[in-house]
Length: 490
Ligand SMILES: *[C@@H]1O[C@H](CO)[C@@H](O)[C@H](O)[C@H]1NC(C)=O
Image (tube, rainbow, N blue to C red; front, side, top):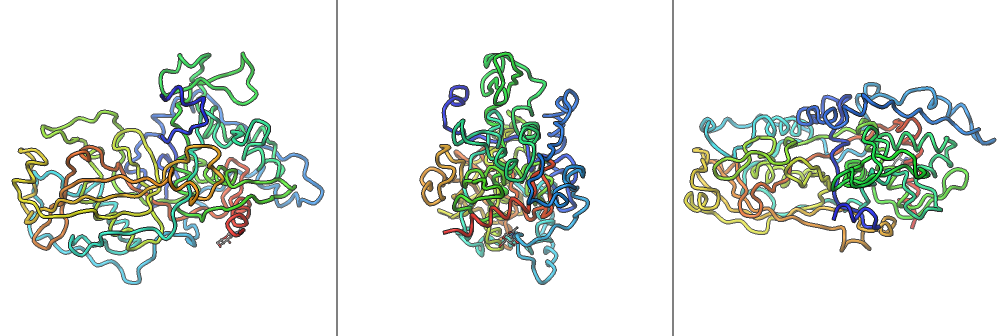
């Protein structure tokens, strides 16, 4: 299916192993992504940096008479701004509301944690990020009975494709072979050398990102990958194996959470027309560029990097990075998030090694009822060890509402309301929560279809580098000006 789908106009809603979550450096203090991303970037692309050199930065085409060359000149010679230069990016779009009072310290536990307990909130992968989150957003309530049973973002994040790498990311002429790609349009409008800018994009998020994996035909690439060359590649030109699920879903997800939906085509400098889909492609690329260094995120729970994690005797993953997000943290995080924030967050809905980033825009608790210890063990396994501090167990079913990738290129410029049927999706999670004498959630575990099928981790962008330049040429402010025009139109 993966192989056949690549020739159709269907976009596979699979995405993606790299990106905002894979920044190898430049993570600010706020970012815990390094904690859990580890060296995945090096693992995936270590061979690439060893065998290829980055594309040359694009040069300006001769400036148009009316352009002030000085304004554009620095971008050619100056490397892209580093995060260090703007350690505290403006937070005008921050999804979180700063609290006025410092968060209160957590109450001391009534008893020490049970050292043999399963399903407890994980101190390293969950409680440590929670402390960072609370420093930013205020205390997260853990008392089950006082947590809301539904919540939603003020606006649904806009859908997009994940700009598949095997189609060369935003270099793809998605409106037809005789229509310029989003990147070509940007180059034309802002007087960059189109080929050089396309090379930059391809090197980071396109076909050239797979340099080193040369091929002649698809069968050399195995299933789930295609043997592809850049546009204009002749029969004997260079081709590489590119996984068909790779793309910039992280860039799309982050941008969709932070920026309002663009509504109409707009005209940029030199009379270049940018459609809504073009703007989505360029903005998603900006958010993903340079390993996500132009954005700052918060995160919760650790990324699982194993395709088939080991299991214990009750069938649960033993590796803490794959065993989370725990059910207790899912409930605490989701219910508190929408109380504190008007925007959604992102989740990786694939529990194991693949990453499928999607924007979450709401949740609702479908049912909850108390169960006995014996009933709990029937659901979890007889040797499951429930924390001895537990005085109450609740069986909960919660629906998480999220946005999926657009399924057709022709949907890309349509408003969310017109493609709602195909992009609004939901996942239902079944789990038990373990409560202590205060009624606080101290842990939980998934059961039934949700067993080993929980979200891998959560994250949310809170800032964009306002003066950033992506791919050595694409300026956030230039892009944002076009974006704003498209948001404002009727
Ligand atoms: C775009 O709109 C946002 C929100 O209204 C505003 O803060 C920002 O200054 C605008 N930027 C540009 C470049 O138009």
